[in-house]
Length: 254
Ligand code: G
Ligand code: G
Ligand code: MN
Ligand code: NA
Image (cartoon, rainbow, N blue to C red; front, side, top):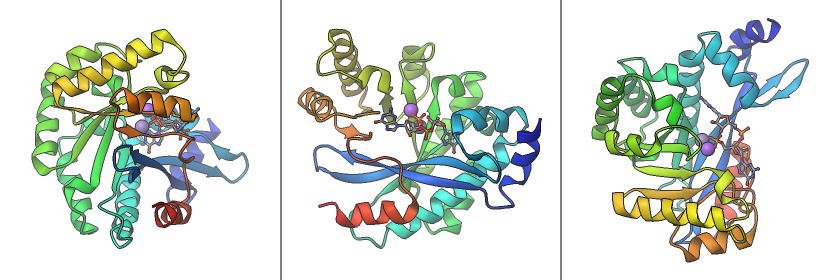
């Protein structure tokens, strides 16, 4: 398959890039960080979306290599944000399941942070429920080591996978990201309202922060804020931005 071969060279040829989508603290009304999202500029096909190429990355056994490239690039970028004087911005990096299989993942993350002189609090890891499935004892010890370092862990696309509630009891997460499926039209849909209210209460009860993904309209944002959601992400605030545009976004925001 031609894409797989192309992917092997994508890193070395500089065709992979990260864009940064602002994460908004609704209480302080300001940017508090960014999610790093991968983009692939293919020489012939043009931009390839991560939903298309991440499965190929994983099938080709390249998830560790490309994952560590992304972690390093994101941390290098986050280092630069510390001079903006707009509070301590953190970067959230998505991990593939394969990256969790490595026992030395915490060590590699520790080295990456040290290389860029970043405190662990400047990094958050995003995992989907499916990624966190598998060897629970192993994942649990991995989480303990990462959190002992001071790196935070967010559960992504919450509510769309399996066994969400059981994960929350066995694994220690710092943040729940409510999937945009439940956020879309939350100002008018009774079912979405019931789900979002439950998740916000769940977060409060467990002492876990809650972020609403995919906020596109002001009415959704206001409804969620009124009901106690503290963190937001979505096109209402900003699309994913190039590094330069993200820096400008932070500078220009109050
Ligand atoms: O930016 P976009 O909405 O197209 O991203 C789609 C999905 O691709 C995201 O929800 C995320 O889970 C996944 N993704 C984006 N960047 C990365 C990455 O660097 N690593 C992994 N494993 N997944 C990513
Ligand atoms: O990790 P995750 O798959 O959740 O990545 C977030 C994805 O959602 C990114 O690909 C990003 O482009 C996309 N996204 C972010 N904000 C919005 C939004 O407000 N609306 C929609 N439709 N997609 C969004
Ligand atoms: Mn994510
Ligand atoms: Na998500």
